[in-house]
Length: 400
Image 1 (cartoon, rainbow, N blue to C red):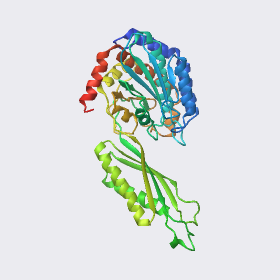
Image 2: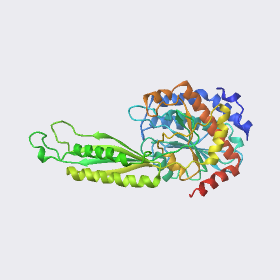
Image 3: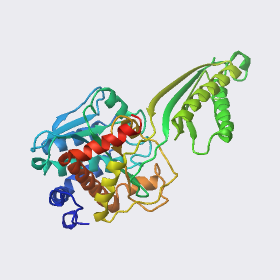
Image 4: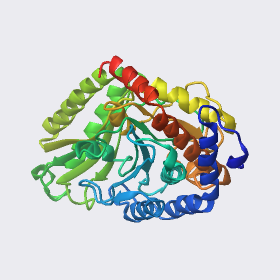
């Protein structure tokens, strides 16, 4: 699709056409960034190449850049003032961490490139905008909730709206997210010879196995939309040694925040039960919390209106939900996290097939459209204070 020949939706169609033309003109720069990040996958908190490339690119387009920003070495914050005087602040977000072992199987390369593309589009019309564009490169979405660190560090302070797209096998403007938290469980036992003196040992692997079995039985009583899943990271070093250390990592999830709190408490009780049954000590560490999503319908309606000229339409809601620290942002300010399809329906996220889709020609086109639409929504917000006020009214009316 040639973005520059599609007539954008009103209001400000002329300015929005300039945004689309700027994204189209930067096509090679934006897609090169997407493919470089895809070819160099870096896990949570280690996205040094990606963060550096993102920071360099927005700096070339006039943004004042902090890198690192706050306490995270791979966080980026860039600002660009509009030329039309004071106004609101709109956050354009980007993610760029990869999954261990399977790379960009969640397509974060496209999210980084689309965020940068939106920043480029807005830079081209900055003379017509009031207020400020705030670009936020956010590390560690897959594990660790990097956005929460950035919230705590004040990097979102004063931002009136946060915009970020996610690649998917479907197009859905309203995001629904499961509350989620990582749980690291470590059992401490006692090593001994597994044949000659097993009674002298305390088997930490047995404790892990008991915990996994308890979780499996618990699932029967869990609400169907809730999830508990985990992996064993350490389970011993040799078959003839009683393992004295066992380590697992779990994730606990639910779309209901109150129910989620009960799940956290019960999971800890299961860990303590396995500890008691095996005589092993246990450490349970919760971290990287992601909250449920508070979708802002004012912003979502503008995103839907602006994406339709590019041939995108909202699919029916799906019950296949994941988690994201974008939910944390949505608890603090008006936020949307739309999904746009980069592949056929039924291709699962976090799969090899989705990883390959994230560097396809279709994903490239969606990346450019996502950049254009986010910038066009930001343009509306930065030229219409009443729209910003409406987004905040909805947010505060929801109980914030």
